[in-house]
Image 1 (cartoon, rainbow, N blue to C red):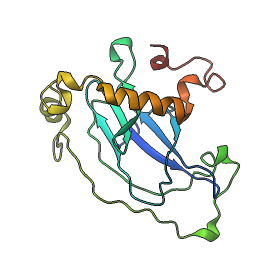
Image 2: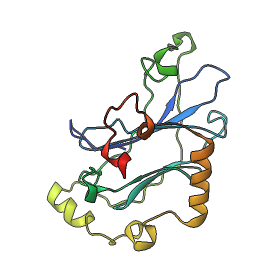
Image 3: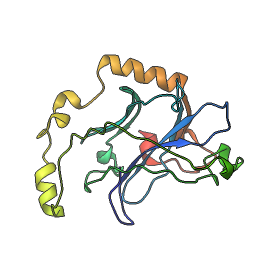
Image 4: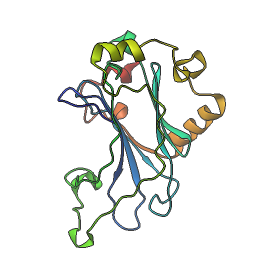
Length: 198
């Protein structure tokens, strides 16, 4: 999902390239006001090329939950009160694409795209969007329409945190499948991002 412009907000599911036989990784990222660098990478417990799976964002005023087949793999909490930016002021559209990122995505750029395997194809089905519709709205009207806390089902108090069963699933995924977390990358960040400190 992404808004438009240089200072855009963006939520990503990215499948990183691999060498045949290697496990697939899915990377999530959060951009706020044009700044990303909030990546997490997870191994998957299935081969995503064999069948369709459900990849979803649950985004409200409290958190962004990234899920695969209704299993939460990442939770990005709203920590604005601690001075951490949170995407909430820009409407976003949904996009799907296929692009070459072999300068970084395939084993850190060590493995290059084998163009003899082209054309490369991706297939989507069953899009479901339950959101505050901003079609044709200006920014001020959008804020008034979508900005009231608890106005919509997804912002009700019960949606402030994961349910118990979802917490267990999330903990299992974090323990078993998380292979990279920017909040633990001390080689990359001499000063850890603010959201990683709380």
